[in-house]
Structures are given as structure tokens and as C-alpha cells.
Length: 336
Image (cartoon, rainbow, N blue to C red; front, side, top):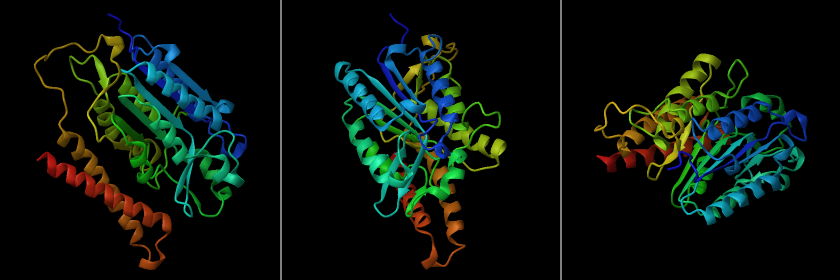
């Protein structure tokens, strides 16, 4: 029996350098390179090298990203047991006038974002064409570095923000979909002080190496990633950067394996009879706690304005966060 995670496929996108230098973000290349190393390590995640497509720097054009998604569509069509990963690390922004979100790939033009950047509807439609039973999308699109010097260059009505919940809802449509984002609302994603990689990717790699697994596990599950990232990313952002960064997870579906654990050898089975399947309540409770905390933070920000002068982006974030809290509370009631 092969110990490879032979049905795993991944498209890893690290935008890195952009045609307009002010938008370049070198750490995103470090992130995807480190992620690929862990995925293809036969003693860790055990993906096949030929099942990974890495796009970085000038390779991350709009057409190349769409070609990569088509490649995943073809792989899923020929492998009915496929598990698909799409990981994007780069900048993103939201057009207040059109209510459209954009991923800012290598060849976008800041003076014509609507016609040159990769729009969320186009990205979502390409993902919907991938008929895999398990599809995990990770978007790390609100980096503090790079964007800080470029905010003044955003056209009118465009704001730098993490992936809005409405886009997440569109991305997750279909069976076996999971969407992770590295931060929420107006938060940024931060880089470790040593510059090796982002805080989020650092802890994601820890989780893929088994940081949240239990004795007897042989694979890394989606729930393992959620548990580890949900705890460690906020802690590291506060400790290392003195900032708030809270990952978001949409897991309205059954848990599923993402990779082999330590090449399939797993962890020693000292308690073989203990159940390891998380209940819906165990998944929802920490997510609800984080959502309520984030909502409180947003409401405190809004309290500093008159009702009619609350910024548009803050009103959008408040509405999305209130909806998220309501949905999680409903899920929690159903699990009782």
C-alpha cells in the first residue's frame, strides 16, 4: 500500500514581485515555497511532486492562475477521489461602487483594477468547474507589508481588505468545500519578525506537520488545521507584532483529510479507543467566540462615529460580522 497522498493536488500562488513594484510582496513567495516543501516531503504530507503546481513572481499572471485552475479541473475529472488545495498569497481589494472583490496578481494595473485584476466572480466560477469531492481554498490577501505603501495609490472607491464574507459564501458553494482566510474584515496579515514567512503560513505548516493531531492519527484533517490556526495565529500576532489577526474558517461540511501525517506513519497509538471525530459543537463554539470578539471590536470602532458618519467599509464589516455571529449561533443551537 502506497504511503503517498496520491489523490492530493495543489495550486500554490505566491504573487511576490508585481509589474508595478510598489505592490510587490516577496514574503508570499517564501510562503508558497515553504508550503510546497512540506507538501511533497515523503516523511510529512507525502504529496506527489507532479501533483503540485507552483506559481510565483512573474508566473502569477491572470491567465496563468486561470490555467492552473483549469489544470485542477482536469485532474479532478480523471480522479474521482481527488483532494484539491488552492492557496493564494498576495494583495486583494474591494470596490465599494461595484461591490466586487479583486485578487491583485502580477500583471494587474492599479489604474484599471476592474479590467486587469482577477475578480472574485471569475475566480469563483473557475473553482466551481473543479468537480472534486474535497476542495480547500486558502486566501491570504490582506498583507500589511507592501499594501502600507500602496494604499494611497488605490483608485477612489477601492479599499484594501480581507476576503469579504459574501465572497466566502460564493466560494464555498458546492459539496465538500472549505474556505480559509488568514484574517478578517479590516485586519491585516502579518509577517514574522525574522522575515522567514507570514505568521499564518508558519502556523499552517506546523499544523500540516501534526501540531494539532492526536495519538493514533495517520492523516492531517481539516479540523486539525482549524484548531491549531485558530489558537496560534492570534497569539503570535499579538506577541510578535502587537496586532490583531484572527483567521476565518468556513467549514459547513464534513471533516476530511488534507494530507498524510508524517508520511503515513502518524503518531503512536497510545489510546486507540478514544474517539477523534469532532462534533459540530466543538467546531462552532471557538469560531463563535472569535466572531463575537471581532464584532465587539468593530462595534467599539463604530461607537466613535455619529450614526450617519460611520465609514462605508466599517458598516459593511459590521453587517457581515453580525450575520456571521447569527449563523454560528443558529448552528450551535442545532447542535444542542
